[in-house]
Length: 198
Image 1 (cartoon, rainbow, N blue to C red):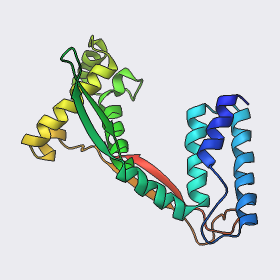
Image 2 (spheres, one colour):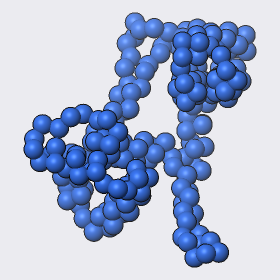
Image 3 (tube, one colour):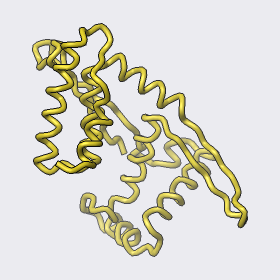
């Protein structure tokens, strides 16, 4: 396991604490989670995967804390713009969780042909995919242009005018069963999946 993997697990899991749970049980639950993540690291999980997975496990082990962390991220959302000394305009956005997921889903749908997405069946779809693949702009430039187009279109049109039949969106599906698996503290585990609606 690398230092970066260790740091991803450590920062993602945080300290063992869960509201309404005795400290010994919390330490045990965090230990089991850490061992699981170490196994995933040894099996070759990337730093990004480990960081994401550690946060997921922390949220499962500490649902009250998860709600608080979600709210804190939501409260930090912001947009800041400025002009540098050369007259170049800049922007910095801090996204809340849902808008970040929506925007990433939108970019992923738009850039699928360049990122190895699904193959297209109709001639028109294949032609559009080829045109996008041959576009000389970088993916970052395409994302910028799409972002600006979304803002312009949103100011002028309805969602159906902008997106057609397939409106990008995010849906969270929670899967759980009263007889399902439980965490080391005994709470029912539910899994949330973000589904790309676009």
